[in-house]
Image (cartoon, protein in one colour):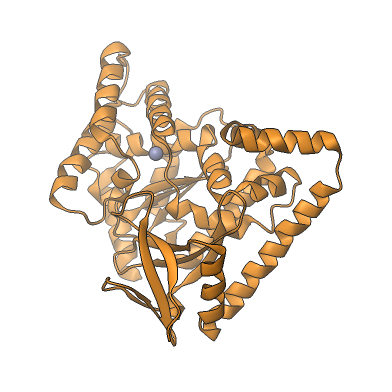
Length: 368
Ligand SMILES: [Zn+2]
């Protein structure tokens, strides 16, 4: 008899809380009841997450490049998953056991500390969000850099990243104008990817998908996306998001300065983490100020959002930047208000030859 695993399915167009499903392994294949999804074990990666670092996820990307995840619901489901997973997944699961042990070591360390610490931990649990914010602020830039680089390595392993050439050079020149005086040393990269997306990693690594570059109608639109992502870095949203979704054992590991054991866990969070509405609004508002400070016309913010919003109605494909950026209409209005209330007199068009950047991105794709 096949043993079923009760799980929550998370995916591109599914509700954020996930969909309850039953899954089971038959040999190397994973099936989901009542769904036309059949996965080979080689497509799956194992990761851990959750508040207490006790959740087990199976992750994969579909043919469109969208990220999907299954979370085993109970401890019993995790046990069935571990017991029935094919041998090819066992090395990854063994790593999960090891991480589990690593976390227990952290707990052991904590256990040895004083009552004051226990009290502080109580406070942690009570006000987790605030604590994550506080912890993120305590992380030195050098640690953030390690985290960012480790995450980048993981992303590089998953797809084609363009690190040099004309397109990256142009992006870097434009980016430099948006990051004057920052505590971070920014790195601008392009990922060959058909989904319209851009994301920021801790310490100023910004990755723009080729499809987003090709979707921009002018340099101001590209500058608007970059300015928004810059603020996700400056406000440490990426770091907070990673810490928050990875669980608080990770918070402790970061506090204790041991990043090595948790980077893989944190790196996994990048593709799947969504910022809250408040953080997105903050990135918009401060991104607007960033454009104004750099004397770049902020109209690209409105036109790019509008374009994505229009397309969102007609197709579901390849729009992850907007999917991870909800309440588009509300945000367009907020930016329009900013333009009205704080107009930028001396602003000019962004100094970037978009046609050349787009041509070079396309060329790189052909070389591949
Ligand atoms: Zn954002």
